[in-house]
Every structure is written in structure tokens, then in C-alpha cells.
Length: 399
Image (cartoon, rainbow, N blue to C red; front, side, top):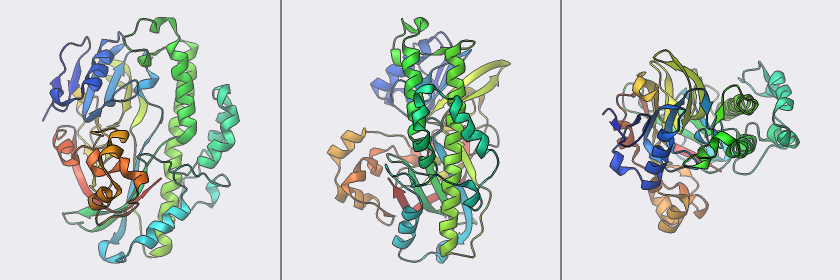
């Protein structure tokens, strides 16, 4: 499809959807971002929607600066998936037992582990770096030092909201019916706490006094505030990656217990709320992706839809106009509050027919109708990614 420029911005803002279809609040955010003096350019993904501070579905490239709101509070949130040797015929007709086994093995919602994860006792988990990772907790912002026990107990837990664990079936092609395991989570409470503390610091720095939106406050390279944020940011991004790795290893073991013959391919994993140091046209930039994945040429990524609709494994095309990025999912088309006002548990049950999942009022805000059509989102970014596999969930675990 290609992009459409958003008019009236200082830095180029390139949009991979109909600019007139963007909700007014989100369009205003994008124009505010494009007005910041440090911004080199912005790429707007087709799943774009209004977010706290910065727009969800935005890729913001800055010179010598970074805005913590452009990362979001769930630092390092992202996806992991692995293809198994199982096929649909291996699965039982009733998947309730598999769903229950997953929920028993991986804490969801506000639940945390009674004892911290011992990496040595998790089969298939990468063992390197754990001691050094936890040792660096002591270097984080002193205001979170009391949260270490909680952070350790939340390692390997799902959380709530739009986080999920799924068992999916590949659709079409030579591998139709192959079983995939997939999950979506981030840096849990510790990432949120670090993000909010640094966002509060940024708002009160003098160079942010005249911004069109104080939530877009930035840190400037070469300052102690930037150094402190980047130190905590990198750690939280690693926490999120390790959190997903623990859950995926546990999930694989749950499936292995029920299907001893199973074999696993190499996992696919990607952040979609994070910062990366990247170079474009010879210029070193800090690229923040908030609700977007890296889609460099050949990069494998995951773009999920809503519960009940399906997801995609993709390969990046390396489009420099989008800063080698693509959408992170379908994107919400209505707020959680509006979804709860509009739909009932009966609507949720109807829209998730054929999926073993919660169908109660507690997750109505995640109903498929609250999200954009994932097939339309994919069609709008054909120049950003190619589809490797189309998946449809048969089990969905939510917090």
C-alpha cells in the first residue's frame, strides 16, 4: 500500500493507513510528536490508536534524545511463538484440560509465583546471564529497590489486560494444521514502576517546559537523567525478554507432558514496546517502537489479532521509510470502557466460538469487536512484511 504523509508537521510523519481514519486524539498526538525538535521522523502503523503520552502504533526516530512516553509503561512488552511437530489431529476434541494445565503452570492476572523461578529447574531455558541480570537490579533507580522480591516472583508470569497465551493451528499451505504455541507479555510491574518514575523526572526538566504535551517530555543524550533512564530501560527490556523465555519454556513442558512425542522448532521472539539504537542514511538515531515491531529485511516477527481472530508470523521487508518496522497487532478500535458498555458476555461467547477460553464478563473488554480487523491491518502493510504463516487460536489463556 505504501505510506501517506500526515500534513502539518515539522518532521515527516508517514502513515500506513488512511490518515482521515485516525481518531482525532491520536492524530493530535502524532502532530505533537512531529513538532518536537529532536524528532527525525515518525512512522505510523496501520494499528494506530490513541495512547498515554505517545500514540500506540508509532515508530519515533530521534537524534540524541528519547521520550519515555514513546516507549510506554510496559517496557519490552512483546511476543514469543514456537512451531511444534504436532498437528490438529494430535489434539483432543475437548481442550479444556490443556487450558487448565497451562493456567496451573503459569500464573496469570495479578498472580505471582510463591517462589522465584530457578532457571536451572526449567527445561529448555537459556541458562546464561541470570546471575548477572539479577545482580544489576541493585544498580536500578533507588526508588524501586524495595520491589526486587516482587520482580523475582513475577518473573515467568503473564499479567492481565491484553496479555495472553495461545495454542494455535497454522492455516493453509503445506503445513496446514501444524500446532503453534504463542504468548504475549512484558516487564510486569517492575517495568511499569521504572517507566513511571522516569516519565515523572522528564516532565520537570527545563528543556521540556514549552512542549505541546508534557507527557512527551524527553531525555537528552549526555545528561545523567538520560544515562539513568537508558540503564533502567535496557534492564527492563531484558526482564521482559527473559519473562517470555521462562513462560515459553514452561509452556513447552506443559505440552510435552500431554504429548511426549512433541518436538519444537526455534522460537520466534520480538519486542513491541522498546528503544533501539539504529542508523539510517548515516545518522545514528534512537528509535522507539510503541506498539510496533522491528521488520528489518529477513527479520521474523509476530503480529497477533484479537482473541478469536488469528495471528501472523511475518518476515520483514526492511522498508527504510518505516524505519524497518511493522504493526504489533490489530490495534484497538474502542476503549476498554466502551467495549464493556457495548458488549456482553454472551457477545464474547459468540465471537470466540470454537476457542477454548474465558467467556465471562471479566474479559469482555478483550472481545474481538473491540479491535480492528487484522486482515485489513495486514493488507495495509504489505510493503513492510510478508506473511510466513497465518495462525488461528484454539486455546486462549488470559489473565
